[in-house]
Amino acid sequence: MAMAMTMQLKLFFGRLRRRSEREEEEMMTEPPTISSCEHSTTSCERSVATSSTCSTVLSSSSILQRIDSSDAIKSEGTTSDCPSCWLCLEEGSDTSGKPLIRNCSCRGTSGYAHISCIVHYAEHKGRQGYGSSNHNFNNVCRYFKFCPNCNQEYQNDVQCDLSKAMVSFVERKLHDGTPRASYLRIVALVDRLFVLSAGSNNAGTSEGQVICSKLMFLMDGMDSVMKARTYYALGCFYSSSGSLKKSKAYLETARNLLQDADDDSDSSVRDIADIEIKLNCSSASSDVDSLQSRYEETFAKSGRETTLTIDAGVALAKALHSSDRHIEAEKLLANLIATSRRVHGQDHHCTKSAATALQGLTNELLEDPSSTDSEFGDIDGWFKSI
Image (tube, rainbow, N blue to C red; front, side, top):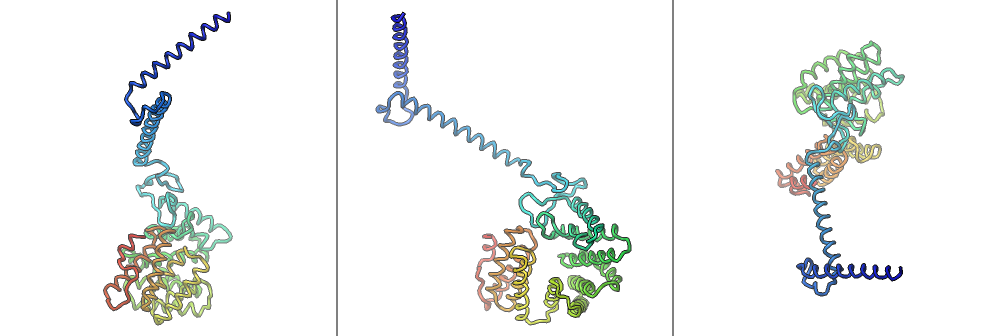
């Protein structure tokens, strides 16, 4: 029995040796695949090298296929890359064909919504706020003015559409004849008039004139601060429509009412400063001092990145330029543009306002060879660099 087992083992190992010799002969007859120094490589090493090379080729091909597939998916667009309305969660246009919009400080794919969804949401929140014990303007109309995601004011066309919707909501839904309803209507009309005043076209002139008539009719029931705010809005509107004499009269009335009211609130102090600038009642140097103080106070209270701080900085930069402090104005505007672009985006009104101010400042310096040279030189190249 043992001898039989020994013979079988010898036969097995003999076959295995002959198979190995045949494989070695076959390997020796194959052309070299790695280098010309094959005479120093054993058959085992050749086999490993060949296997490794083949595996690498297959792996690379597989990776390239995955990359091509991934690029194809990206070029077609994926669901996760497509913005959707954060209220109804639908992509694309609403039932009336109006597209998704976003004009706040949200970034990435967040903050997009249909204007109809925002209006519906703002009206719902407004009714809730009006029914609560604390029914001030902020609780009732906040969602017509501020994005609840980034907590920044809506801008441009969205701001214009929502301010109009806010007036419609207050006049249609909150008309119970109570003093609070009348107050909310006045505030909504004043806010709408400010928005129309800031517009770049005359499309809202007729609507603004109707609002002016309504506010003059409602003037008797207002307190002094509300009257001052209303006159301020009237002055801004008539200034934008070209009626400078009437604008000046309204702005002076607003300033006098605010000063007599002895109201130390931030909004009143800010309004007085803005009115003074519009009336050009102060010298350039005093404008710089007051605007410097306002910018520093706003910076300390709300931080570097808020729209209030950026707007205050733009106003200060313009005053610095008027006082021939061109380099200081340029540096301030450059910082404001970089901050606003990073936080609020390229299309935000703060970014555009600061960029327009810097462009205008530089154009003036280029037209006037006697002025101090601009530190930024080629302004178009500078804008591209940021």
